Every structure is written in C-alpha cells, then in structure tokens.
Image 1 (cartoon, rainbow, N blue to C red):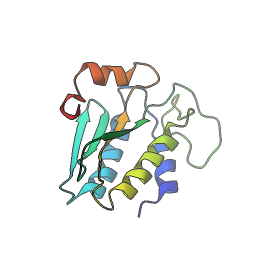
Image 2: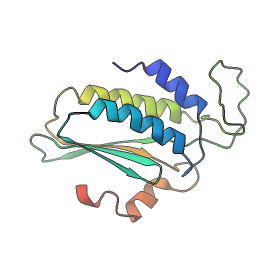
Image 3: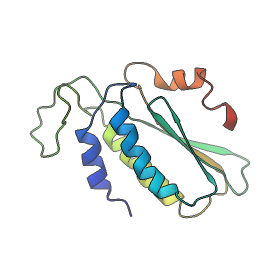
Image 4: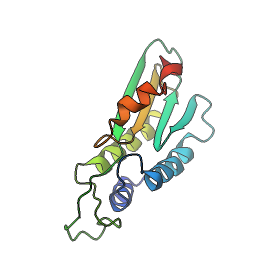
Length: 146
C-alpha cells in the first residue's frame, strides 16, 4: 500500500518547472511501474515529461479520464517545512504535489481489479506555463484512445 504522506512530501521536495519535470516523471514512473507490474490490462506511456496510464476495461464502452498537473511554480519556498523544496527558486505552491498524490492513490485503488470501463490517468506536464494539455493533444498523444 502506498504511503501517500511520504509520496506527497517527496514530490514537494522536487518541484520542477513545466516540461522540465524529469525527476518528477522518474519518480512517478517508478511508483506506477510497481503498481502496474503484471497487469495485462494496463498500458503505460510517456510524452516528454508527462505520464499516461491507460486501463482497458472489461466492457470498455466508455472512457473515464483523470488528469493531474505535475509542474511547479518559479517561487522561492520559505515555509521552513522539514520537507521543503530542494530546488532553489521552485516550489509546489499550487498544490500539484497533492494532485499527483491523490491521482496515485486513486490509481492504486482502481488497479485492485480490472475496471469495467476504460480509464486514462494523465500526469500532465507544463500546466502552469506552457499549456501542456493542449501540447499533448496537438501532438496526438490521445489519438489511440479516442
């Protein structure tokens, strides 16, 4: 079972600006890779620094998407938290560390058994500064699931 508090605090320490979320992506892929191992109904895909997790439903007549943002803001953190940002001048000040943690927790629960409907978890880069969702769409990232 995921330790969501530990995950959120780790993500809070490694904030990265849009399309530079390399450490964030690596951490997400490590966690998600462990969760989806051996699950034949799961497809894991990356796009730039984003991550997509598609679950093929047993019925699969609909598709349900859950999107979370993964980037941070160019803000110097002055919270004094024991788990404050390790990246000077960058901070998860908008809650994206929470959003990612919630998505991981939901994904873990959904993966307990194959869902009836198709599901797509989108860990979207560059929400704050570069319209990452639109960039993903324009690049055709979702085409195979539409």
